[in-house]
Length: 255
Image 1 (tube, rainbow, N blue to C red):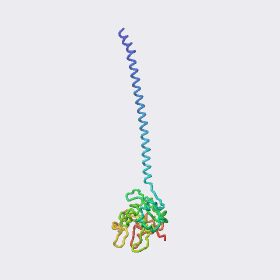
Image 2 (image 1 turned 120 degrees about the vertical axis):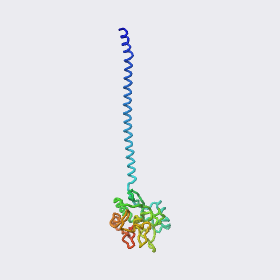
Image 3 (image 1 turned 90 degrees about the horizontal axis):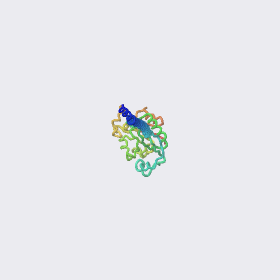
Image 4 (image 1 turned 90 degrees about the vertical axis):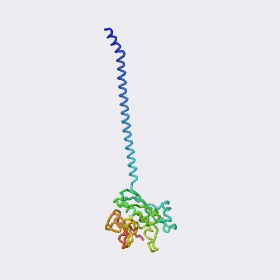
């Protein structure tokens, strides 16, 4: 009995305190784990929120990048420098003050929104902006819109590249009369699909297949389509009605 008493005594003095320490350590580990898990979840949620904000910011920037632009101003100095000696002769026979610089958005043949440049007579600048805004809203396809100076003001190069443009100082073929392009009162649209046809001669020659107007394809101007209506309803005439049809050509006679 004495021996049993001694064992019980040591049990209460040694074993029970050890068990108490063990339980304390186990609970402490559980508490720390709970804190760590809570912190991790909080950090994760914070990360998700920051990623969502970042992605939203990226989306907003992307939307801003493709926001359509339709504007007109006087000719900027850097654009004047680009034009002189090309679309504008060195002696500047027509004043830059009679022209406007347009920034125009459009849908290309792949359905992407692009923004181009155009020079027109300032008297029609607002109207031309409205025309291109209307055809943009209709998603009418235009291959490209660049200043003809990007092609060294060589009309054949611009047309062959299917570039839509307006101002280029030049006279009517075989005359000394200034053409409407030379005034900024004529605009050519998708010249490859809408060539100038004189008998068997097609200009640009790369658009020969599109001289057949019965085979309607993307980019071809057809009487009554959205582009045709946008121009003609504002008093512009279409070269497609000429005896030698110039299907790409719209002009406004003000003089």
